[in-house]
Image (tube, rainbow, N blue to C red):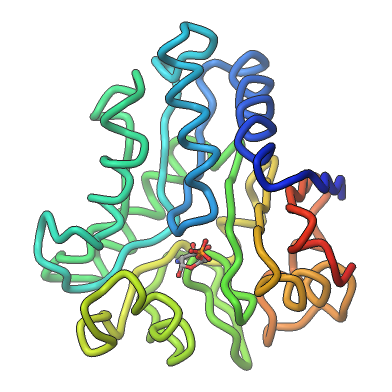
Length: 240
Ligand code: GLP
């Protein structure tokens, strides 16, 4: 595990270097992308690098980690909208090359199987970007007595709904369910980049990276992966 600790304002630049390296090595990379506030500095830098002609996503593919269940199409907080606004509308990745679970599917189980098949057909993820929830979730793989390997529907933990309610008018508007890729999909990614910022993540980051590997802290499973890069600002690294 390689850990970078950088000042907050340099997180984006490092994110640019990491993706540039990946796309140079494999222009047709399959990228696993994440939502939340954490990846935003990465995405801003990627957009800027594309505009400067320094990187290109023209041959890449992307698969997002997760999506809320039941938000109406075009809802400002759907992860589909988030990805369009914060990245996809501004880079040269063809629209047909990005996939995200459909949280409005009538048959959610069938949608999960579709997503797993698409991931399998393409040979899995080359480079997976992850944030971390305050309770140690990755994607929406919540802590519990067991974890699921494939894409599945999950009941969101109350603390996750509370944490994400800052983006909604009230907690009642935060969906109770989501579709997420499973831990198997994440851990099969050839490279994983975990990013965390801010003091509020310091405790869970330290536990995830140095504590016991447990389903009660899904991010702790990253300790078992052979190629993880962790990007932290000084605050998020303060308890390591
Ligand atoms: C959300 C997402 C995760 C994300 C996490 C942290 O619930 N499903 O993919 O990593 O919460 O979000 P943030 O980066 O805003 O702290």
